[in-house]
Amino acid sequence: MYHLLGHSMGGMIAQEIARRDFERVDRLVLYATGAIGVLPGRFETIEESKKRAAEDGPAATAHRIAATWFFGS
Image 1 (cartoon, helix red, strand yellow):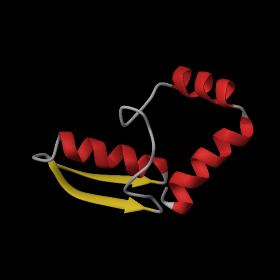
Image 2 (image 1 turned 60 degrees about the horizontal axis):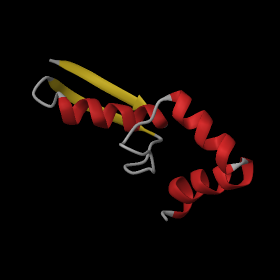
Image 3 (image 1 turned 180 degrees about the vertical axis):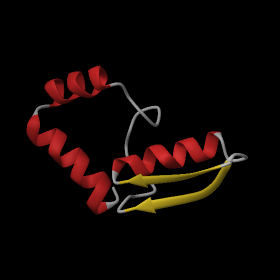
């Protein structure tokens, strides 16, 4: 058994770990995180994120991030 803490985006990662390893997680602490976010396939590689940002451009990338983190859309 172990305790798991996640902060910010790490909270999303901690939720995924807890979902996959729920029998061994004794306590889950989420700090300044959200329960949802738009990450294709839940998580994407840094290479995918960079490619997507380059293709979409800075304004669209910022809007996509802000919309999922702050506006709930």
